[in-house]
Image 1 (cartoon, helix red, strand yellow):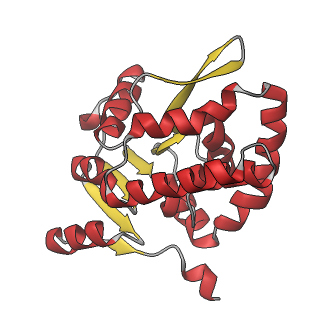
Image 2 (cartoon, helix red, strand yellow):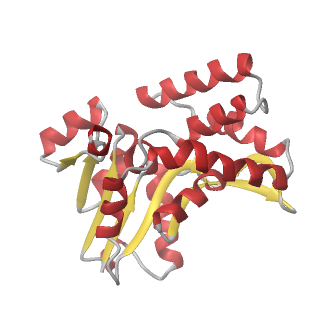
Length: 225
C-alpha cells in the first residue's frame, strides 16, 4: 500500500485558493477592497518569503466566515469554485491524481487552506481525504477561529500523523509515501516521505531539490498548448 499526499495551492492548482477566496469576496463586495486587498497581498508575500504568521493569517482569513450565514457562504463557495478554481485546474494535475488513485493507495490533499474552501476542490479532483486547517463551528455557524493545530509547515506532519493513527495506521504501514509540493514551507513533510516530488517549485525549494536529487515536475504545460 502506498500513501500519496498532495499539496493544493500552486501544486495541483495553478494558483492559491486562500488568496483567490479573499479576492473573490472583495469582488463580490463582501469585503472592503481598500482594507482587505492590501492585507491579502501582504499575507501572500509573507507566505512566499517563509515568514507567515499562520495564526494572524487565520484570524484574517476565517473572520469573514463568522459574519455570514452558512447558506450565504455555501452559495458563494459554489460560485467561487466555478469561476475562480476550475480555470486553475489543468489536465496534467488531473492525470497525476488519477495515476496515483490505484486500489489500495491512500490518497489525500494536505493543505493549510481551510476545509470549507478546499472541500469542494478535493471532491473536484476525486480525492477522498482532505487534511486541512479546520474552521471552528457552533451549531453550523463559523466562529472565525481554527480548531487544533493548523496544517502548516510542521503542522502538516502533526495532522497527517493524527489522521493515520485514526485509521490504525502509521508511516511504516506503507511501502512508499509520496508528497507533491511547490513550496519551501512544505520541506518538513517533503523530508518525511520516502518519495518527495517538487512541482513548479519556488526558488528555495528548487535549490533544495537539486542538492538532494529530488524529482522535479511541472503541471503547468497545459497553459502552453
